[in-house]
Amino acid sequence: MASVLVVEDNIVNMKLAVLLLHNADHSALCFADAETALTWARTERPDLILMDFQLPGMDGLTATTRLKNDPATADIPVILITAVEMKADLEMIMAAGCDAYIAKPLRYQELYAVIDTLLAKRQWQAGDGESDRTVTKVPLEAGQRGGAAVDVSVLEGLIGNDPVVILEFLVAFQTSAAAIAQELKAACADHQTVLAGRLAHKLKSAAYAVGALALGQMCATMSTAGREGSTEMLAKLLPLFEQELDAVNTFLDAVLARGTTA
Ligand code: MN
Image (cartoon, rainbow, N blue to C red; front, side, top):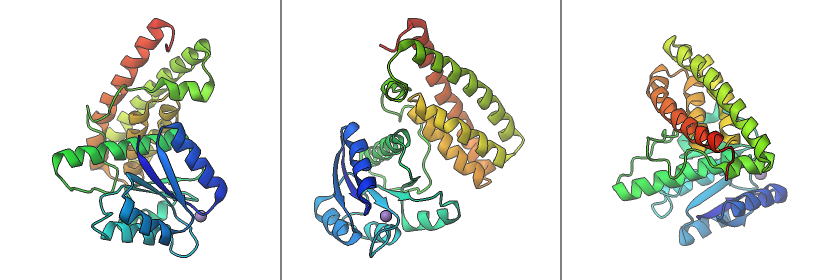
């Protein structure tokens, strides 16, 4: 449960964001312009900020820069919501100090995964007293993921709670994930960064769909690393990815053995 400040000028997008946040037990407060939102953030200090890129007046990137330069708000994670994949502008997004970005339309699995990661990271930093703010998403270390490897309610929310359908879906996921993981490993070994990025991207949405949120986040990070041609980052991420996939498989094996998600 976190308090989330939503800065979004489109009423439909605003409502969608609030709905998704409420469904995950977060509280949400919305402003349609950045100026008002900044003033509010300074005094109320929300746990997290969802920032639309295109806003009337000050845009989302400028607003984020201001938040990050203000000691009162610098440590509040900001997720930038962009209308399109702003691959070309990733540097700009990072330079502004955004902690993550998500492309519209908001997909709840991705939103929840990013929020969970940022909140866990912030908590971990607060406990550690460190202020190391790496803008590229820091991979989840083993044990940093709170709770189970798979949130089955996510899966049930997506395809209904018919146990037969869910179990079939899980088997299909495991088979496909194993194949992709093998190709991903080979691509990393061959330094084929673009291919590795594409494979990670392919697995990402499937992982989010079955509720393997940490795995999905890991895939998103690997996808970015591949796209950026970072062999070194991929090499660092691969063992973490494999470890997380193992945890997911262990969890799913247990579900399949029981024959029910209950
Ligand atoms: Mn907008």
